Length: 162
Image (tube, rainbow, N blue to C red; front, side, top):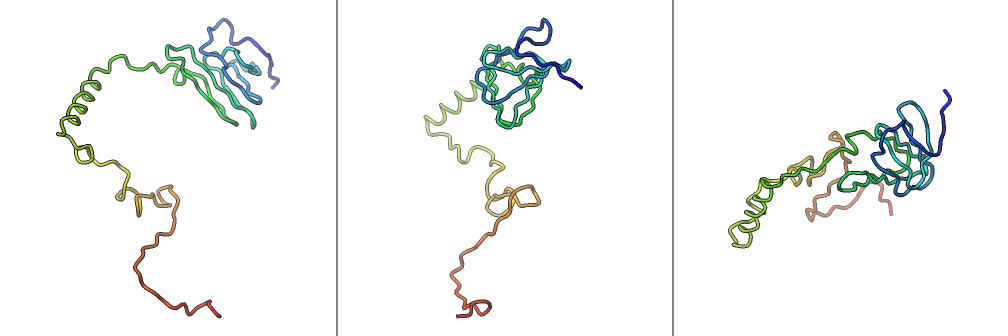
């Protein structure tokens, strides 16, 4: 299949959802219709395009949202720029959280609150995973030897010929 390659433009009359802020190496945008464009700084990025970075490619895309969100992709990355990527608006109502934060701050100032004992224990720590809180190899973590210092002394009698 032959790809149409262009240096500018995008999918039809669609409005861009962002633009290229910084780019290194070769980075392509592939439209849903298969059109391929090589990206350069300040090029528009459109909804539903795939952004593909090469082995030496890196890109930062600034979106047109109210926060001017930046997406940075490293080398050998393939991402579809859809609403999951650019459409996340922060919640407008933080009143529940703000009230809880104010209560915790007041309790800390008055000395009525100890954050080390008042909250539920986290998932990390000695009980999580294996010894010392490190996940075992069967859990997807790396295994390592654990040495417990006992103070015992031994005289090696195997493989320590002197």
